Length: 78
Image (cartoon, rainbow, N blue to C red; front, side, top):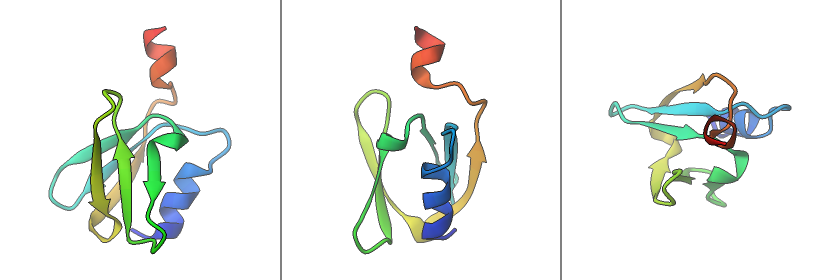
């Protein structure tokens, strides 16, 4: 996947939660645009989880993006 594809997911209006599928089979859900911080070089990113932990990923190892049902985590719980 490309940096441009990640940017398109981050800046979509309206924002829709999405899942990042990694080449190794892991997946990470992004519930808000602020939950992803891209490295200045564009190759890596930090993905924050709802429990305030995070993972550092290599964007070259992203296999695909999946748009989720559109409900934010706040709407589901609150």
